[in-house]
Length: 178
Image (cartoon, rainbow, N blue to C red; front, side, top):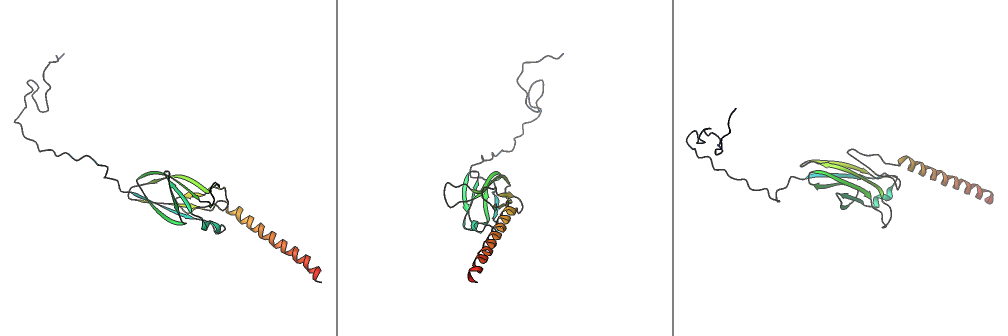
């Protein structure tokens, strides 16, 4: 069993018995301290490009603007491609079509977390729905229009109803003329 001695702590390269250095002391290089990182140093921002579009069946949406909220900061944009510079990280992106009147429910609201890397560009595609109260579509590729088939069927049904009304009107006018 070895006994523990009460001696001064020995440094690196010191003799165990006496604690004296094992050789001559050599001066080390001067160490230059690096400055503390300041708040002015920032990472390179990433870029988020939002491509927003709407269906031809809804031409009235062209007169409205797209409301975009990234991490709670609101923006308003016209339809098309819109670049936004952001710091790297995940960002909550919310998009909807603005209504002309306040207090009305939004058209095509959608929210998703989008990762943005420093120095890179991330593209997301937003497509407004064809009918109100439906959610919009947001994703990394071009999106389909939500409610397109129902909207086309309603427009076709409206066209048939107009043609039927015109036919009834013609049938009612012909006996009066004759």
